[in-house]
Image 1 (cartoon, rainbow, N blue to C red):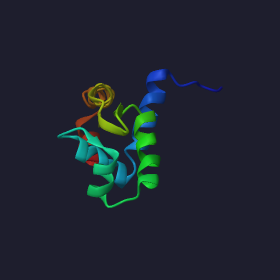
Image 2 (tube, rainbow, N blue to C red):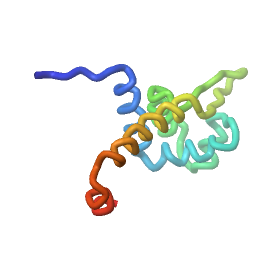
Image 3 (cartoon, rainbow, N blue to C red):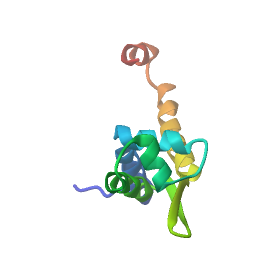
Length: 109
């Protein structure tokens, strides 16, 4: 029996995939405090624009970042709505800890 993923599940999968790369995590950490253009991100990360473009595309497809064009530059910022969606998704698993025996929960931590 084949199961299909809901749109929410597909979004979560894409987000977790995007979060699995150290460079993408660094990008997100830089965007925590401010919007940055590609050239600023390249400079701060010490990476080429072509390499960074691939990672930014992955982050955009996962809806973790947003982009806007101003003149010839593209600026990136966090998409906080997606982070809230991930936080909500993960919080659902905490619910199950109330059902599991206490001993079992402590063994896995």
